[in-house]
Length: 120
Image (cartoon, rainbow, N blue to C red; front, side, top):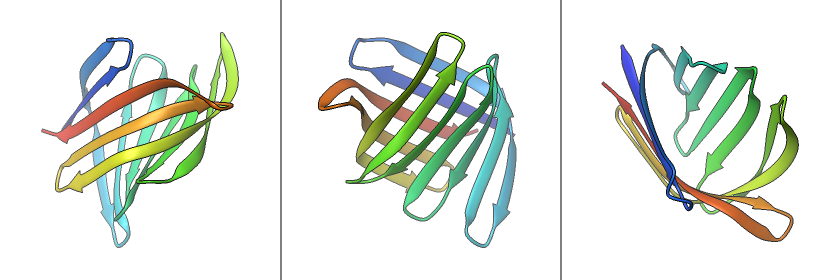
């Protein structure tokens, strides 16, 4: 199956890519697994939250849960930092995820992103 990932951020940067992915369903949700040029990526979709884990040249772990602030680590050769994420909107539908979230460092919002994930 194919998975399309699209993001836009508050700086006007846009990203769109489609990946060959594996979908695994179980009693608590869905797991998608794919690889991009930087990492192996696992997306866990549960009833009210989405976790995105990257493991490779870029290592990160983000949890999106509406109206909640969660910790977010980002590890790469050029950056090793911890942030927080505040999820403003999270819509989980069959084969679709739409989220709007802010990345926060200290007391400052450093970026706001829109994420769209579609199973094709």
